[in-house]
Length: 90
Image (cartoon, rainbow, N blue to C red):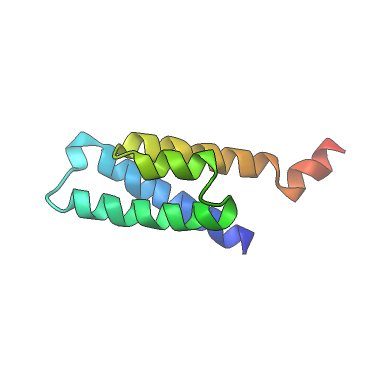
């Protein structure tokens, strides 16, 4: 289950990052952004809850770059807490 959320967040981060690039913007970007943001919020709610800082930041922002930064932060933090990194650290 954890791996599923990790890969889904990674895909959504890449999708939002593409929307952020000025040369790739199109007419349906706003709707696509809000759909991807909703999926990110669903995952963050399951992983951390609605009271988490990450959830609140994504919920309150309309900036794709901020959402990408939060997704990257969550992915980096989860990579550091993965069982493989803990085994290496032992």
